[in-house]
Structure formats: structure tokens, C-alpha cells
View 1 (cartoon, rainbow, N blue to C red):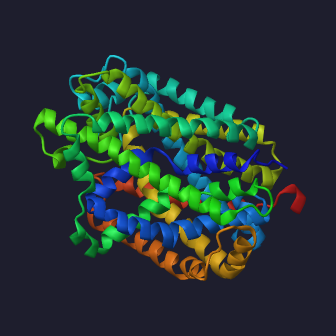
View 2 (cartoon, rainbow, N blue to C red):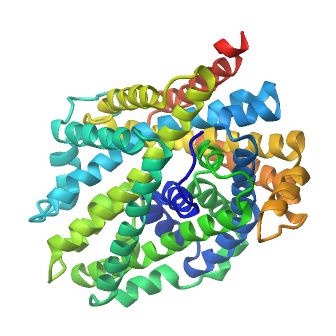
View 3 (cartoon, one colour):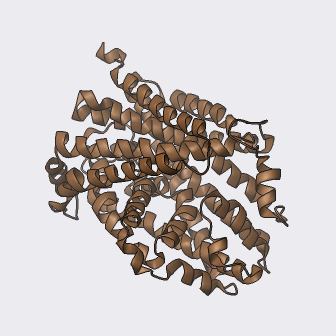
Amino acid sequence: MEKWQSRVAFLMASIGSAVGLGNIWRFPYVAYKNGGGAFLIPYFVALFTVGIPLLIAEFAVGNIFRKSAPYAMKGVNKKVEWVGWLGVFSAFFISIYYCVLIAWCLCYIFHSVGLVWQPDAANFFFEKFLGITSSPSILGSINAQIAFALLFVWTSIYLILYKGVKSIGKVASIIVPLPTILLLILTIVGISLPNAGSGLDFYLSPDFSKLSNPLIWLSAYAQIFFSLSLAQGIMIAYASFLEKKSDIANNAFITAFADGGIAFLAGFAVFSVLGFLSYQTGMSMEEIARGGIGLVFITYPTGISKIPFMASFFGIIFFITLFAFGLTSAFSMVEALSDGLKDKFGVAKEKANFFICLIGFLFGLILTTGGGIYWIEIMDHFISNFALVFVGLLECLILGYIFGGERIRKYVNEVSEIKIGKWFSIMLKLFAPIILTLIAISSLIELLAHGYNGFPGWSLAIGGLFVILILIISIFMGRVKCLQEQ
């Protein structure tokens, strides 16, 4: 049976899966939007009440059953195997568009040489780089530059996964510390820029009045839930390769705090440059601090191009950091699915990984077209806000009630230095399900009342049908009997 070479290898892989592109562009923006420094209060409350309990539960179940997520769920109850498949298939479909974003970052590493996005980063990104079309209904042609970068990304994932957890551990032990060091360099350079302090004030200044808004708290819980790679089968699969009775609680706390710490550090790197950009352009921080794709590929490159010293080097470091963090998350999503296929059908992981990467690349080619960016946003919205939340809710109920929250707690306390109290069972069985249900309801109300990002209704309907399709495939996989069961 495959095993991690060391505890450090497991932790680096788990942290690498948790830390991704969202830590760099999503956390700083969410923090700013929801009270700045005051957002840290609901953030850490969410970390302790939902993030860490569910992460402990996933680590524990993976270590107990020593199987992939679908088969760990099957070990709990044969009727809920499909929930594990729903998690890993959701993760795989995330990897399809996630790898396209990583391919963009790879391209921008080279575009940083000479700062080719000048003088207009927005025009370069949308028109010259993406060749964006006018609507989701018009895909346009495949962008050769992005397609070759995508091929490189998927090839890299296949090679990293080729020898299983041994190669994953080795790669993660290099990839995770490297971009963290680069992020620290970005932060040091960023805070040395003129007017960086105003950007950091903008990022950190507490607005405690916003804490009375329940939506702020839901944002904190959503950020924690998505940031830790929960409900995707990844952490269950990774924990299945640990030595029996490994220190579950300690591993969960280290992974969670590392993820949050890197996200918090990213805020310093991002907003120090945005403060400098405000100083250079005379624009307000509100105008500049736009989240998501625009922040990374438009606003930040604009700021980089105005740095008076080593601007190209600064841009290269930034996009290498994004590329490396993104890659560690992407290959963990593939590993979760290939591990499930190995358990179900006895398929050699080398073959499973090859076909998964091939399918991921071919589907990803659609997203390298001019209309691809629209479908990336639609897929991300529906999978993140509905599919993963649904899996997380079911996981809490299955592990809390069918398997038993107290049973998990007892096992964790037997093998861990840090002992967890009865709060764990309460959070897993009651608090986390309530929060995840509220997130799903608020997302649905927002979608029905206001749509999403101005997209036409028919495209959003396709997004909804896409999630239903993943659900149907997962239920089918849960009912299919493999050769050993026939």
C-alpha cells in the first residue's frame, strides 16, 4: 500500500492542496469588502467552528478506512458511496477550469518579461491575450498560446502523479515552500513602495460596524470552506496514505493555520502594490481594489508596470507564485479521482491519471477560446456555491450521525497530542450543517433575485444543469458494482 515518506511530506501536500489561487486574489478582496481587519474575527471563528472540525473529520475518516473518499463513504454506509463520488467529480471539474487559470499564469510569467501588457493591461488581457467574444454563446477559436500552456500544465500534473504519493510528497516539499518564500519577497518589496501604507490601511483598517451583518459571517464561512479544499475527497485521500494512528488533530491545525497565514500574507503583497498604484494614478482604492480575475491579470500588472525598479522581475515572481500554488491544488484534485477509480475498478493509477489528464486537457481546450472566460466563471459559481456546499452538508450529516461524531472524536483523541472536546461533535453535527445550509440558501436567493454577473438566464440554466449532471454521474458510480463485488 502507498504511504507518505514522512509526516512533513503529508503536511506539505495537504497545505499545497489548501493553498491555491484563491488565497492570493480572493482572501484579500473578501477581507477588504467585509470589514478589513475586522473580518479576521468572523474568519477565525469560522476556522474553529467549521473549517478545523470538518478537516479533522476528513483526516480521521481517511486514516480509519485507508481508502479514497468514495470508498471511505462506502465504509460508513454502502448507500452513501455516491457522496464520495460527488466530491471527487466536483473536484475534477474544478480542475478543468482551474488548470486554464494556471495556464494563464504560466503565459503571464513570460509576458512579465518586458511587461508586454503595457500601456493598457485591461485591453491586453481581454482583447490581445484572451481574444474575448461578446457573449457566452460565441466561443470563437482556440487560443494557441493558452492551449500549449494548458498542455504543459496537464503534462506536469501527470508526471508529478506518476509515481504516486512518493512523487507528490517530494514535489510538494519543494513547490509549497518556494512560492511562500517568493510571496514573502513580494511583500517586502511591496511595503517598501511609496504609499504602500495607505493600501495596507485600506486592507486592515477594522470596520467593526460590518460585523452586525450576517452576510459578512456567511462570507467568512464560505471562504474557510472553499479555501481548505473540503468536500472534494482530497483530504480523505491524502489521509488514507498516512501511517495508521497518525496525529490527526495536530495535522489539521497545522494545515488550517498555514492556509490562513499564507492568505493573510498575500493581502500584504497585494494591497501594498495597490496603495502604490493609487499613489501613481490618483485613483481611489475603491476604484482599484476589484476582486477576482481582474485583480490578478489587470490591476496588479498595472501596478507592477509602474514600479520604478526591477518591475519585470517583480512580475515574474508574482506569476511564478500563482503558478506554483495553483499547480499543487490542481494535482490534488486529480489524485482524489484517480484514487477512487483505483479502489472501484482496480485500475492502475498510472492509467487512471493518464486518462483523467487527457480528458481534463480536451475539455479545457473549450475554455481556451474567446468565450471560455464566461464559462469558467459560470462553472466556478455553480460548483463552488452549490455542488461543494451540498457535499459538505452531506458529509457533516453522514460522519456526524451515521458514523458518529463521538466515534470520530474518540479515535482522534487516541492518536493525537491535541485532545479535542465535545465541541467537535456539536460543530460537526449541528453548527456546520446549519451554516452550510444558510450559505446554499443565500446563494440561491441571490441567484434567483439578481442572476449572476449579468450572464443571460440560459447560460445560468446550463450551469445548474451541469451540477445536476455531476450529481447523476456520481449516483450512477455509487450504484455500479465492480468486479470484486459481482
